[in-house]
Image (cartoon, rainbow, N blue to C red; front, top):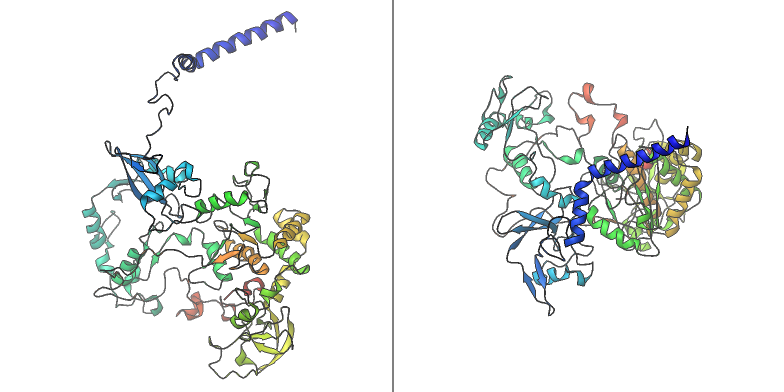
Length: 613
């Protein structure tokens, strides 16, 4: 190309670019010019220094006096942006009655690292939130909490009952009155032009069996399923109506599709499949945290309080953490300092990573022997530990045995037990650490960990293995190369992570709260939390806390007790979901019951048998 032509094109492009810039940014340029002249961006602000910021809700004088803003008022509330349910203080403009700002409630236990006493005077609580008082007393709301202002004004917010008028799935609805809602729900009728629908009045029959061929289904009242989107502090009222007033067994809540995999896996480890107990990390004293399938400060519960705890922990020189997640979370970045790292993993393969870690831990004797060898509460007291587990309990391992997969009981061998066989009082069998003889888990001395032998029972010789032996065999079923290929993490990285996790004694934690919401979530969660059991950090400083506490949503009041009322009924039958109901007790056993030897409460699945009681 001719150099003169090239120079012309370059000049032309430059001129054209300048023209486009001038046309596109004329308003911005005008504002910039005005800003240079009068100190604004084209429009004067309310204040030369503070701009258009809100006037403070209060101010603190030099002598410590708190003066409220008479133009505003503050209302305590609660955030439903997620199920952490943090406390809020909502600033309201007295003139317009509109919300000005949403902040945290200093009295709420999830708003600060350290909760202030409820009897703290309001003046002292608010002064502690002032900037000069430091960060510990500050109470904030996260982005979701502040987003409640937009949600309140959202044009999509449902403010009255809606009734479907089209076919299912068409998304056609009309608003109706509460009176019409109550009438149609209670009385029923041809509500949708699709035929008669029974109302609550007809369905409520607490005497007639729902299905005579399956009496365990309970009465016809169980045809009502009452459910909600989440626990907004009103579950007790819902259950009071559903269970004890209407008489239906079927109340469902959001837990079945939000974190159920994690909670069930944790409940199995903690031997609590009724309330699904789980643990919380002690971030104030922890030295290393391993987050798998979750993003600390962005997930888990309560994530806002844990975000503050994590931020404080990052300022300590002896704390670090690793986040194992398919996607890079904001909680693992250079902005968070150099004491954290992200370990990418193939989705749904957490168990492969953890089983590889468990294999290394067992092969290198990096487990907590002092904890795992205590077979029961008496031995725990003697050893001075904070907990015990069933790692030493013997599991019947003969596949042809009628109780294959169950723990061996004292009544099955000659150990002097005279009570009811296979009852709760029938002790589990262990091998004494000193003598090597069979004993019971209620002894006050430790037991042997790895057992694989034949014992003589009243029914003959039986092969037994300890729970930890089953876990070991499960972990060594494949080599590290196999686990590496499954999760797409190098073998060297797996072993390095296991070494790091076990190098802090009991001041290391693994947390998965908020993750594992997929089809194999139960098994992943159970395997992940097994790491806490192997290092014995439960209820120890710097480890994880079981039953970390909470506040009930209701209780017996000074005037009313809502748990007691006239004509109260007791629900009967099984849940619609069939949860917590053994298959073998179903009436129509040929249709819905699996073979008896596949009983869901078997303990023979290796890693499932090491549970804390």
